[in-house]
Length: 274
Image (cartoon, rainbow, N blue to C red):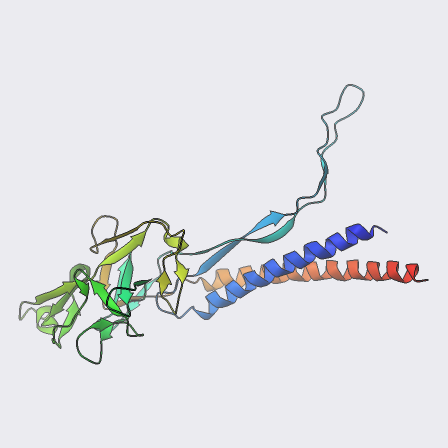
């Protein structure tokens, strides 16, 4: 028996099982965040490794025919993992909730601007001091002049393209002119898929996310900000389920190969031991 070949089967199978386990971990994480506002699904790809080519074959001559390459295929490993920034569906939100339709990310900060995180989760409210517009974790929403403040106003809402207005109810009813308090600033990156997940639906810059630009909603390539709306997770349940089933089938096939190879190796050992 070719024990070297059998050991190679186990080695390749081990790498394949590791790749498939990581893939299922990603699918599980995506499925768990189907209801998370602004969540962007992770997508992954596989790539081949350990290409085993015995010879390259030859073209053949008048006396001998051609011979195709002799090869035993390739192993597999997890290739790339990146964020899927496809637009999520928009649903109804509260008074100070908003959603980006198109490109762009909200900028939030835990310390007034020294540290910046990025998110598509537009669930905002006024903090307990009545001063700042914050997210669910208390991070301040950044605008054109820094953190957006409520200016002690109580009747707040979003006008077109992320403009924060006071006297909002009367303005919507056409009874009074609204006062503009500030405006949301959006950020974008040349490689937005290269951002890294930080905490909840927050994202951070990475070494591959590229150049960051900021701008006003609706200006240039930036998307618009939709008032009293929230962007839902972009996880596609059916797709995640199908992918997970395919990976599970592949794992079952690899486990069968491991068992066969292990049984054969055990037979060889038993024969050697007499």
